[in-house]
Structure formats: structure tokens, C-alpha cells
Amino acid sequence: MRKSLVRFSRRGSIQNERGQAGESIVTDQPRSKSEKIATVDEISEAVEKVLPEEWVKLNAYGNSRARFMALYGGAYDGPDLVKEAIIALLEERRTWNPKKVNFVGVLMGAMKSIASNYKEKSLASGYSLPDSQVAIEEEDGETVSVIEQHPDSRRSPEQQVLVRERQEGTTAQLADIYEFFQADAEAQLVMDGWRDGLSGTAIMETLEIDRTKYETIVRRIRRKSTGRWPKEGNHVS
Amino acid sequence: MSANKRWTREEAERVLDQIAESIEKGDAVEIAGDLKGSGQDVNEIASQMKAAALAGIKEFRQQRLHRARQRYQESSSRIERRAKRFGGSPEERRRRFFAALESNPGLKSALTMQYRDLNDLTDEDVETGLDDLETLGALEESDDIDS
Image (cartoon, rainbow over all chains, first blue to last red; front, side, top):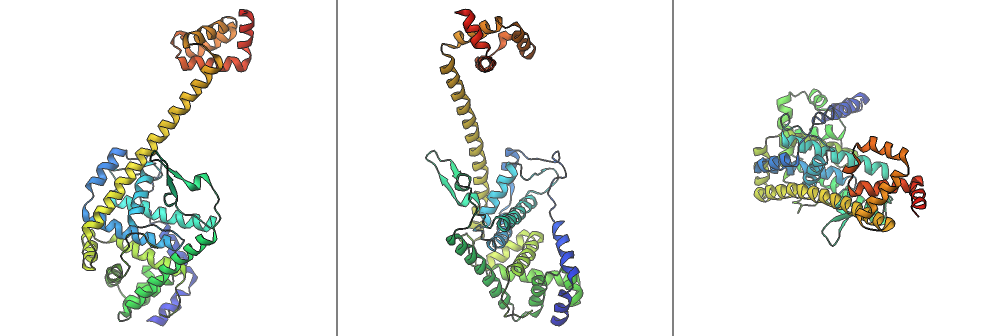
């Protein structure tokens, strides 16, 4: 099975297929400005209604997106990302219609978008530490962004080292997780497909398995990998 | 794919993306159970996340307050600067403003069109009007006539 998977992965069209699918995933983007928008009170109320297990799910999701950001030098964790997502909603950089979309889903959409923007900025500027990580607190308790005051976006040697360490730390951790599945050939094959950029459908076809089987393997990877990451306290670095 | 092959950033990104998608689709109770099973304190995680969300709301409110305070300070110092420049009490500045208008009937009719009733002008409107008249040179002309 492994040979055919590798051969399959060399087909260029698969990469494109996956890219297009990825772009269509964001579902909470408004179609127009009129399709908005929650007030501070509505968001506060929604925060109060989130169930404990939903916070745990948001944390797992946030940590996963934070690890993605660590590949580009980010030092976020789940709580950081949820905070940024809430601010993005309140500042109307993201919109939410409470009558139409589930709040937990909208927060995950916002976190994904933050992570994706972080990557874009990092690639475009060579350096994009988030403002919240380089803010200094003034006497009256207000925070001021150092980046706003000194908008120099070049990486210092120290920052380059930090970025490289975060990137290498994350890839090494993933390699460990992959090794952990040594006795689970199916899981490793699915991970191989992901590494090669194959879509779920392409992996199913190649491995000759149905969707239920594929989803069972994916769930196994998710469940076992969750416990393999170091327990951040909670900064991913 | 060789197990020993070094992971590239792109490969890691793809795998993390798939895991995130699986979490997104996954059942919250099941995910919480997985984490609990791996020895994590799910109650603590939930409280940290909620606290972070509430901190986001607080930060937004503080930023809004900060911007409002800044606007107020800017407006106050603008009024103060004008008061120093034009001198006298608000009543004196109002008298000076209307005196300048009386000596420029064209300006008076333009302003009447803008404000409808000149008696409704606030002190800040008067300051702004004095600013405008000064820019137009109408204030100097009026002062010359008065003296």
C-alpha cells in the first residue's frame, strides 16, 4: 500500500485539489457587511454559555493552530488564540450572526484565520511576532505595542534563532508522534498521505478504504497524538 | 515515505492542518475524554480558556475607553489652545465672533445656511468659527474696524 501511496502523491493535480478544498473551508466569513454582527453584550453572553467540554475542544483546536504558527515563529497557545479571536470578533475584523452560526464554530474559524494570516505575514515580512507578545504596559494599565512604535519588521539574529527553534521543535515533535505509530501501519500511511499533501479522498482511494475506516484511523491519530504533545503551560515553543 | 526522513515545515503544516480539522469535526465530549485520559486537567483547561476569552472582552473595552479618553483629551486641548489664542471668556469670544460676522454679511448668510439658527451655536462651534474667520482673514478686518 505504501508504494502506491507514494506514487499517487507524485501527481501534481492532487496538490491543487487539496489547496482548493482548503480555501473553501472557512464558513463563517460574511458574504457582505450587512451579514453581521454581534455586540459586546451578545459575545459576553455567548462566552458564558460555552460548555466546559467545548472550551476543552477549543483549547485542543487552538493548540493545534498554535503549533502551525510555531512553524512560522509564533509563540501562541490555545488561550492566546481564543483571546485574539474574541478581540477580532469585537473589532469586527470577523463577523458573527448569532442567529445563524454556532459560537464555538465561529471562534474556530477566527483562530484558523488568525493562524493563516500569521503565516502570510511571516512569509511576507520575514518577521511577524504578534503585538500582544511585545506589548509594554504603561503606568495607567494601558498596553502599547512596541511594533506600533518601532515598525521595523526585520528579524534580529535572536529572533531568527527563536523562530528556528520553534519550527524545529514542532517538526521534531511531529516526527516523534509519527514514530509513536510505528506499530500502527494504517495510521502511518494516512500520515504519509497528509505529509504528501493528499486529500482524504485520494488517501481513501489509494489505501482502498471507505470513509468510515478513514475517519476511524484519523480519530485514532487525533486521540493518540493529543496526549503525545508536551503539556504546554501553555505557550507553544 | 521514509519514517526516518526529516520533516519539512510544509509536511508538518499539512499534518497539523489535518489534525486541526479532525478536532473541528470531533465531538467535544470525546475530545475532553481523550485529554482527560492522557492525564490533563480538563477543568483547569476549561477555566483557562474562559478566562482568556473574558480577558479579550476586557481588553477590547479598555481599548475603546482609551480611544474615547484620547478623543476627549484632544478635543479639550484644542479648545484650550483656541481659548488662549483668541483670549477672553466664552461670552467675549462669542461677541467677537458675531462682531466679525456683522462686518461680513456674506459670511453671515453662509453660516446661517449652515447652522440655520446662529443662536444655537455651542462654545466649540464659536471657537471653530473663529478659527475659520481667522483663516479667511475676516477676523483681522473686523478687529481693524472695531479699533
